[in-house]
Image (cartoon, rainbow, N blue to C red; front, top):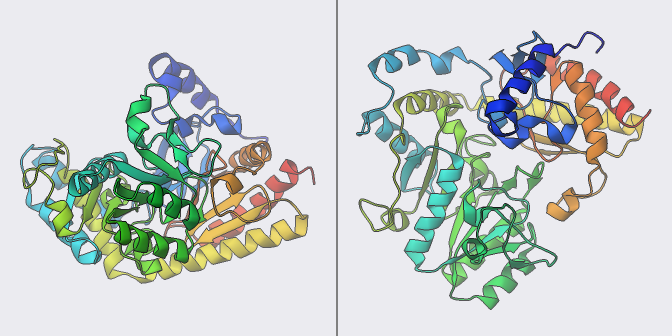
Length: 434
């Protein structure tokens, strides 16, 4: 800890703030919630990340999930130079886009057709537009604590009640834009049924993260997801699974494979580009035939299906498809990690709870259940910030915010986990004055 030096990162951050709002291109990167200025990365390999000051970290962010095989995996990137030499973008179709679409359709029984986009935000925004066009309705249901990107209609909070009309959470979002966004409580079917009964012919879609990944890690209860499947069929609404985080990550077939529940539409993100900017949305043929140029719902993008992202993504997904043991090995490591952290928590008798779903983990700085956003908000963010700083200074990069998940990769070793647990123990001692 005494040898930790971030002088170059500090210098770059000073410069960055002159030209970039807050000095970063995505808010969580600012490290504000943990009381630090950000580190600036120079390179990464396997399970390790290296900053501009030469500090080395065991990385449990993994670009927020898509690097399931670790940083700079040579099997994934092999041949990318040849693709680059042929051109980076054409604005007209390529065969590799068809290969990617075919692989996704073959991998997800719920998907008959798929459209490539450039981000998870684009995917969810587009899926909702298509659902509205398909049903001829305007209202949508989302859940407090579930993040679906920064499209205007999704930047809402629930207010004081269990359910309510959306209230914008960001300046620049007109109230009229979110008036048709209804917010319910995650893992609470009563709140959902009440909204449907109050709006029986107005709800176009329900969008949900089958595993909440933006309020820490909060898995949906199977009865809850099954309830959403049944009620959307009952009222003629479209059920959308936002699998931007979980798709191809918690299992090859995503959370819908784990739960055994098929949505009408699915959204994907960075993992189908092996970390390059990409997204996709797909679903039943009758719904997807609404998309232009086949149907009247407009959506376009010059860089959609970018050949570099498609190439990297195809290699990534084919490795996962042909090596199913990757998923079982990841889960084994996650279970080992969970048990070791729980042993430390019990030994120190501190108010921390480890949540795990497959190979996704989270350390909540509180005790109790974590079924929804209000329960998550009881966490002690100040203690987490102290803990984070201790972990970072001792060579482990956890999420720079309490309400984000940990991601393991195939590159993480048992030795990485053992070393992390040692540092985890000491960091908890500092955070809780033990």
